[in-house]
Length: 116
Length: 118
Image 1 (cartoon, rainbow over the protein chains, first blue to last red):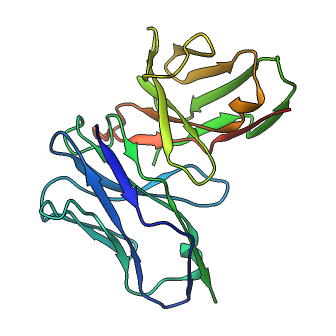
Image 2: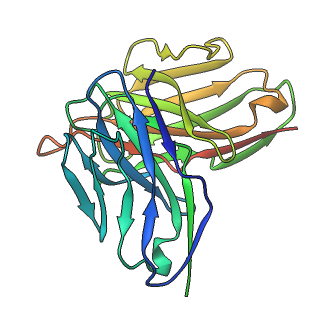
């Protein structure tokens, strides 16, 4: 079956540090890949996505590149801010033509805390 | 983006009672809603998919008589945990999808409901 594995947290960084959260996946089909972010007390929000190999998704300074050869979709940001403190989820979908419309398979989430 | 709400945000109940959780799409019509369950430090696990006006489709291992899902309108789905027991304590999250103006058709998530069964 399909699965997503994220690096375990929590991750604690100082403001302006470089962030990497690793994500690898296994899928029976050709998946679309997503990163979601959940701020305290709020629902999951789509942060970025990529629908085919070598695509790079980006938003709010975050980036992730769809690497089919390594089945990975690592999330990166060059300079984190305190406001980036949240839980980050990697996810995939194999039946939605590039949208998050279909069933999503999630990783376990990574808690990020950024200190001033 | 579109807004999905859940009510209540947290609930504590006694073992053996039933609890109803509501999921509403506030500014769009949700043709499909998903219900997820999340244990501490674990992933969101899809429980069921419900389409408006039809029976929910449950994932393998999810008891449909235990977790009753109703999607009677295009803006409301409910999850009822029947005869709740302490092992049902968890964080329940809904999401909704539907066609928005401009053809935007992503999945939008509610903030979740924390259920504690004593």
